[in-house]
Image (cartoon, rainbow, N blue to C red; front, side, top):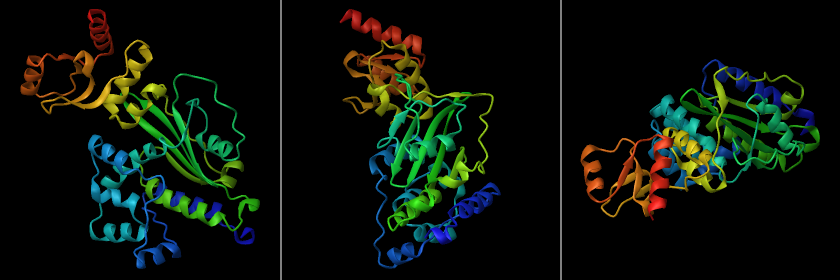
Length: 319
């Protein structure tokens, strides 16, 4: 109810605890009821297939940590008491924003733009349309009065996902249907609040009042590019090492879209490959496997955009 709206104060206190290194877990009475009835359902944004890919390609978390996404906070709390693993949950949290890329709207955001302010503008549909670009670097996901805005950044040779979770707490929005958005906001905070990458979990009124500090991008941070439409799915599934290479290849404009995780007829997995041309990128291929692949007619190219472009172009010219 508007008369007892403490959402902004709650967000501020939770953020202060997280900033001190405290693990904050929100549990509602509905969570307790669902746990007792064994009626906890995965959130709508949970994608088992994508989670499996992220688990394979991102070191640091496994099936036990995924329960944080699939099950409610009661199970998570019990698991944490029995076997706390902050590093594993941090690793999962750092990758979790990719789950909102598939069903989100892809955008181009300036790396210096305040992400919380941008999230509020998207929540109120007042954001200026992004200029048409072939390359995007952010995505916006929304469910009613709660939204998640993520921007990909490159820091040196690594990549980072800056994420803001925002809940609309304006008095006119606090109707009977607002409870679902509030509960979703709490659940998202349980997952994304464990991240070590830049994350802010805020209320609309905090941002509009200027009470949430603007994140200052580091001097070494540059915008990371997501791939154009034909490449986008690959980026969502790629490792950090593969993403940098794929972005360079996509930006070249001449290299055709490869296959990610291609498996040869002999069962050899290839990270990035053009099966029709029998060309693959040599990313940590075992020496014995490399020899067998070459004997089978594959060309293995170093993970260098220029070398890959030349090899693929040569194969097409000779076809």
